[in-house]
Length: 212
Image (cartoon, rainbow, N blue to C red):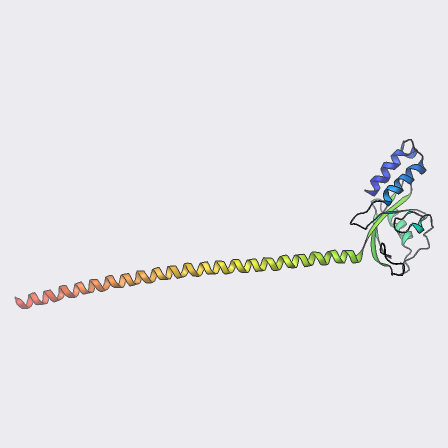
């Protein structure tokens, strides 16, 4: 997005075949970039290859200043590293450093941040934007918690389904067992009836034999 905005204003300038001056196009591009926010608080800044800050929306006091001596609490000359990374990678690259959080009190210490920087060679601008590691950690923790809740809900649902299936299976087995019991009882009764009939027939035969 930021790169596209710069490209648009570059083409409007005499540098890109347009009608307005370079300074007018650059100022218009910087103004538009300064107003962009994503994820509510994240922003873009622009510095040149000096490195001099051209536009920083949260630290306007840096605008126009040479940043070659600016270092984070670990001693990293972050803006010099941004120049090296952006020149070494035409598609841009990442830089880790420490920087104050947006809208944090002046006495608040810098916190870890990772930024993506890319060089716009037509104007020698380095465009950067980053995220704070603590925000990444919070997002990851939120995802983990969400997954855990989903896992627990799935396990509870699976348990309920298993119980319902088990109950259904038990009922089916009991029905089969009852039918088998009834069938066995019926068979026994038939056998007993046949035995009784056989005994009766035997008795009559014995009586007939004695009479003769």
